[in-house]
Image (cartoon, rainbow, N blue to C red; front, side, top):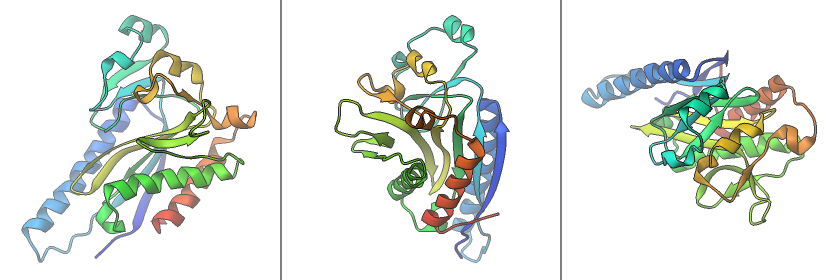
Length: 233
């Protein structure tokens, strides 16, 4: 039996490591349920789905396929900027998280939504693309690179939302980071997502206005429900 209900929580400003450990705990519990079901055909347990919003203090994270050379400063310089650094177990390269950025962590059993990993990432991108339309920002995908981009195929191509996920037995963790009122100067300390020829942007930069974070979160929730055919509670 498929369960398309999604437990939603806004964790507010939370330390990256604490949020990572919180995700891992739920992720592992979901995998344990799926393991039991595989061993016992009569087991009728249903897996739960979760979706968390948060913001992080200044932090850089490096995915499994990334290169530490894309962090352009040393630990002393990181400390001077009030930032931390973690090597983590998602896909992708290096990215930045900080205040003014909406980070979303869906922990979903994709079998509940009849999604492949590829279609899941595509759906997350679609949620953000639809959300940006409310700000008259035209965005799209960049072939060969996950995330949401502006001015694709132009010299001014720039990323507004990064996506990096981990998936095991069709269960996801990690997620997306949408730049809303983000201080983009922090991206100068890295090659974002490993790129040296592409820049980053935010809703604030594109609109010239400081944006109400809760308004953006409500839009993301609405579009997530629509695109995933989910029920948030």
